[in-house]
Length: 312
Ligand code: 1OR
Image 1 (cartoon, rainbow, N blue to C red):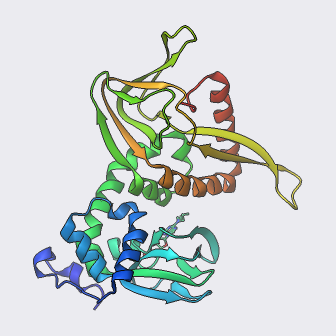
Image 2: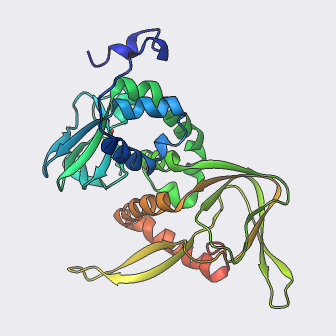
Image 3: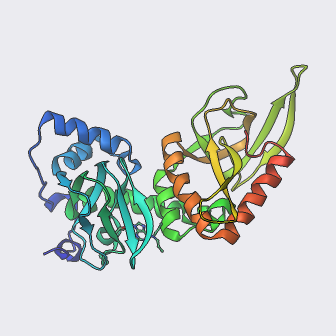
């Protein structure tokens, strides 16, 4: 039965019979690539990693397949190797998935009915991980991170207007890093890939003046972020008469400031790939809620005009 394992008091790794689905070398390599792009798999040890790969089942689904049906009982967690899928709640499209994306964790984590329907848009290759393996290997870490970053992300202005679930997806991708007093987080002029959110402590921002001296330009505190450069363009959406704003993030550019820990500093970081993938959906959400969206844009412009808050 699907939910039996969670009812047992001794639901631990010892009496969990490992699922092993035979695979070719090629399949193993493809799974490695697919999950390499997914944060949920980042902190697994060697054995857990092998167990996960062993347990995965490859599923080739043609376009228009209902992979998950809202309201159904949860059986598998899915990772996308190739293809695109749409996610619907009460027949309304809420998000979509592409390579490296994952879905179907909620019903497994909370013994709840499926919260959404997931339908393939194109022919897709998915890897399915059974409920027992998901719960024994991936659930704890996922739940811990979501709990850990919940409060914090709620207080970060740009994430405020998101749904709880959307903040959870961001939490999945975050990693905490600690810096000692005076330690340099990013150096002006360097190329860097990470975006940073200050979890606790303070950071001082410096810019180099033409004469070579460092000028302190601002102090960042909890909830402030740096390491990504936002820009804003106006585009006309076909069929509408109102200009629609597009907010994007560039983090290919050299760092525009040096950021140094002022005392002990703890940051949550997001890598470039995660950033691009997560900020895409964030923009959609902001657009959906246009009032909030324009408020955020105004805030971004305001800050851009004021200095280098966003351009560090
Ligand atoms: P599941 O096991 O419930 C459906 O099966 C999956 O859709 C779900 O896990 C998530 O992985 C995924 N709310 C809930 N589940 C979502 C959402 C979502 N988006 C994707 N899934 N929301 C939409 C966020 C853009 C929140 C709506 C209030």
